[in-house]
Image (tube, rainbow, N blue to C red; front, side):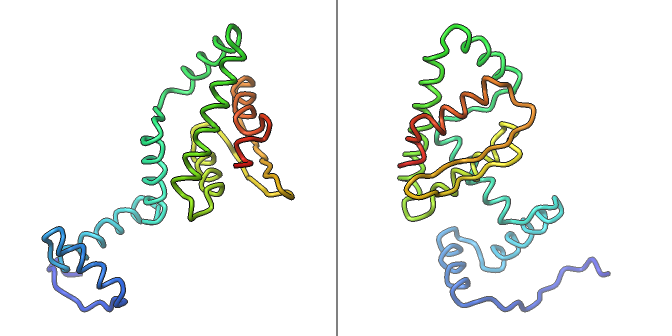
Length: 174
């Protein structure tokens, strides 16, 4: 295989080409440079054994978490804080979890009003660091219900998540 870089003709749909031309004009790049950059990044993704769509979904997830004010902390620290607060301020802790979940549900429903925000919420729960092995939301009649399976999760944290999702079924009735 030759290490010499050459040029090849690649066919692209017209709608995609029009968007590429808009982007390159705005960024001051050539179409050649832009397409090479896109291909290079796609190849890096595949070398990591993920596809570009998965990387984009993960980026969207991380951006949502950042915009929402979520911070990443070690699970041991979270378990410790929940354990301590649950003993002394159980009702306040559960109310804070519930209020945060309710706000997040409203946030997602506004941010993704034209999309199925419950599906996005379901994906968010599956991607979060709660050791959730399975999570699903299903519509039963007028209400939504959830099913969740977890591994290695502190009992109090499970109860807190249940409070967020199930307390008066408010979050998923929005």
